[in-house]
Image 1: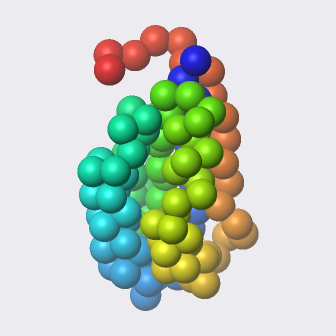
Image 2: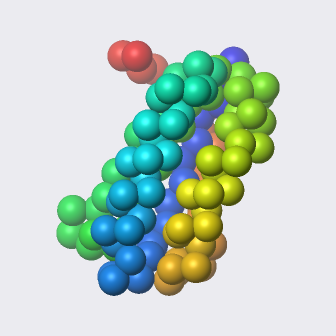
Length: 101
């Protein structure tokens, strides 16, 4: 059964471009190295560019765990964690009802 999650966070305004660059590098890594990650999509709020939401769909718990334990997750966290402004990243789990992917 797939694992579906979102992660939302807000960063300091002067860190937005740095975080966006780190997101792009990270998603490139996921695309190339995590076959069990069916979807990893990152979005930036169009009204408040300091806010981000990431959507993940992992094939199973094994893929989810592999993703979370990767050195690349730690490297990405090292970029955004110091500049969070609204508390820690909020992860939320979802049950998939329907999808076109």
